[in-house]
Every structure is written in C-alpha cells, then in structure tokens.
Length: 200
Ligand code: ADP
Ligand code: ADP
Image (cartoon, rainbow, N blue to C red; front, side, top):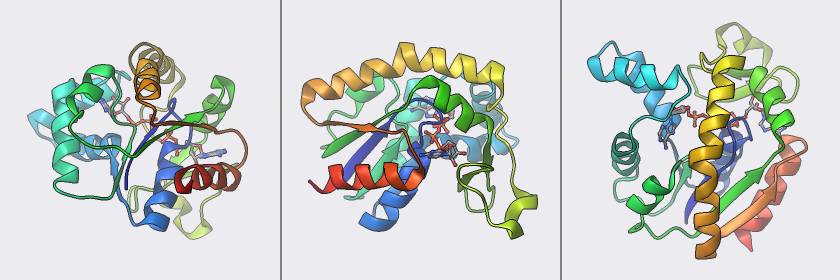
C-alpha cells in the first residue's frame, strides 16, 4: 500500500501516520522529520534547511523530492506524511502509483490549539500533547517544543499551506484518489475513521 496524508499543520498527520504504519506495516516517511534531522547537523546544508523551517517556509521543491524519493527507495509499502506540499511536488512524483490520499479536515481554530501544546520526543520522534495526548510521566523531562510551533511561524505556515498545499488536495481529488476525513475529535476517533477509509 502506498499512501499520502495531507492536512494543515497540526491536523494530526504524524499521529495518524504512526498508527497506520504500525497497523499496516508501512514505512513512515515524514519529510519534516528528515529535514529537522539534517538541520540539527552543523553543516552548510543543515543551516540552509533551518533558514526555511524556522521561518515556516517550504524548503526548495527539488530538495524535498530528493529526500522523499531517497527515503522510499524501492519500498512497496509506505506513507508520505506531509508530502507533497505543492502541485509542483505532486507532479514530480507522478510516476509513483499512490493508492489513496488521506486528507485530514480540521478547522483552523482546533489546529492552533493542537500546535501550541505539541510536545516532541527527540528520542522516538513521537509527538504528544499535554492535554489531548498526554505523554508518559517518565519521558516528560526530555520532551521539547518545536521551534516553529510559535504564533508567528504558525501564521506563516498557514499562509504557505493555503497558497501551496491546498491546491494539492484538489489535484488528487481530480485523480479520484482523495479520501476526505473529518479530523475533529480525539485521536482514537479520528484514527478509527481513517482506518475504515483505508480498508474500504
Ligand atoms: P507539520 O507537521 O506541522 O505540518 P512538518 O513537520 O511536516 O510540519 O514540516 C515542518 C517544516 O518542514 C515545514 O514548515 C517546511 O519548512 C518543511 N517541509 C516539510 N515537508 C516539506 C515538503 N514536502 N516540501 C518543502 N518543505 C517541507
Ligand atoms: P501534524 O503532523 O499534522 O502537524 P501532529 O500529529 O503532530 O500533526 O499533531 C499535532 C498535535 O496535536 C500534537 O501535539 C498531537 O499530539 C495532537 N493531536 C494529534 N491528533 C489529535 C486529535 N485528534 N485531537 C487532539 N490533538 C491531537
């Protein structure tokens, strides 16, 4: 199975992907995670990547494509989390036969609440939320807030999402592979809807 999951920042893409990956034995490709990993290195490339992420802008399309393609290599079962993020990127992976594109539909006011309380575990790359998805107490101390989960950067990321990524939803809708899922409600309820849509 080859899947794509799209939705606004904070809509739950990572949370749903992690569960799908486990249940369906899919390789989870989060381009955002791979970029953050590279950005942590003190290299010229790392610094260049940080300059985009920290502002909430997309990294150059070719860079995202290269990272995504390298990650899947020849794998037959994977989920692209938050990729492609523009129609240009989508067109550049036209040769990949995608089975379904999940679109998590969540109102902006809800995602802002999710983003402002998001906590990332740098060890496992899992995300938690103090209120909605509480982390185990023993790992609490090591959790961090993402540098781009601040009101100013969130605003820019939404702008980029509306301009660049929303057209991708229409692009896949026209291709007949889009599955629009109501992303409101608690993580278990959202995941149950996604799982049902994927297994249909
Ligand atoms: P979120 O889950 O909040 O939507 P991500 O972790 O997916 O955020 O992405 C974080 C940042 O990484 C983005 O704001 C952007 O700078 C960069 N990024 C992630 N995926 C892509 C992509 N497909 N193309 C370009 N930039 C990307
Ligand atoms: P994305 O990958 O789309 O940016 P995440 O999966 O990182 O989104 O989720 C954003 C934040 O919201 C995280 O703190 C996560 O724990 C929390 N979250 C995920 N799904 C839900 C949900 N259904 N309801 C409430 N909070 C959620």
